[in-house]
Length: 430
Ligand code: CMC
Image 1 (tube, rainbow, N blue to C red):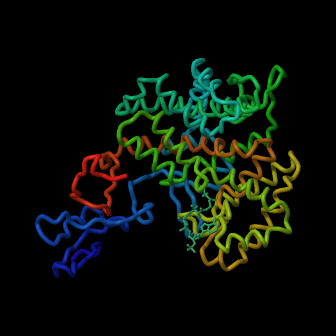
Image 2 (image 1 turned 180 degrees about the vertical axis):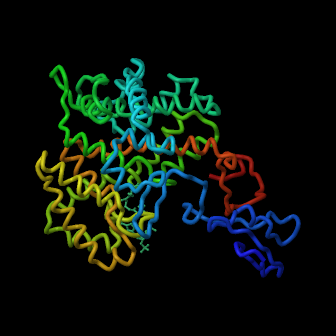
Image 3 (image 1 turned 120 degrees about the vertical axis):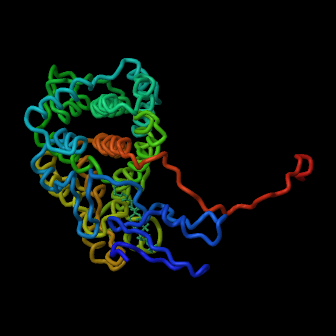
């Protein structure tokens, strides 16, 4: 018997099956051979929340959750955050290799020249209520781009896909900045093609009456590093939404809107906003121990703690902590940092958190930096969505190139009743 196999005995029938093991995985469809009779459907695997199911093969991002390792296309995240710009990393994620100087120049130029929004899209954004949540504005506006670029529906054409990918990476900061300006009632600022990706974003956010906006280089670099850290994270909830919706061959704008919607939830990218709310609620360092006790007693969660995959320190959180120090040299220390550090210190000594392997994740410190930079908590998840757009698109493109992929369609275990007698409305009482 070959070594890389799994032998299963079905005690219902006493029959034995030998299934191949490839890459530490057995194929779910092989389970269907395990039947009690010819008309039996065959065994299924039950896995709510995909706790142990690989849904694809991917060569984009590698995570070893037990060792706290994150790599994009084989490069450690620490090296990329130290040595690259965000657009360089975007190229790496999408094309599988780091660009040379000419390729990078061309790539930056192409992204820069797609940053404008159609005026009708600008007017669309103007129509939101003055207090609309910026993530809801982003989700709706990205979906609305589908009406501006109807040719994007041709998802089978790789060249057409790449064109839409460039548009989306270029336009996300513009839409994000407009959602912010809308919330504070300032006029929208158009992109400035002389500036880098993050500098231009800062220009569209914060330019007032000065003829040319000059971003603080330390803050622009910090934002670029934060964008690198958030660019991809393999099969997380929002990426799964992107792949799942995209698998029906819907266009990338509506598929990306669904991914952004998934990101907005407080258990995913919405956690950074919740961390700040939690720190506000705690109020001071002295209240930390009592707050932790409350969480242990089952009242709420420690936001920014825990991860489905990382059961060791989240490597992104380590880099963010260092970036925070750089930012605070410019902005002054965010007083919330004291509370966060105390929370981390106590939680990491507490058996409840240690035994469950709950460590600070990427969202724990990012909000504190964003707040020091002048963003309000409602905007934090938008700052996650901008760079994650690259990851969503790289994963979407990979999915469409993968000949093993089909429309995503899970099975279920039906638990309801069957073959009930139909009653006419007058027979139903009430
Ligand atoms: N605070 C307190 N207890 C927690 C926390 C937390 N943040 N996270 C998990 N637990 C407990 C959970 O109650 C469970 O305890 P028990 O075994 O007694 O029932 C145990 O730890 C295992 O947790 P789980 O809910 O089975 O873990 P999961 O893999 O389903 O959830 C998570 C992962 C990230 C949704 C969860 O840890 C969480 O809700 N964290 C807070 C929200 C957060 O920070 N999300 C951002 C994630 S990182 C950014 C991103 O990629 O989105």
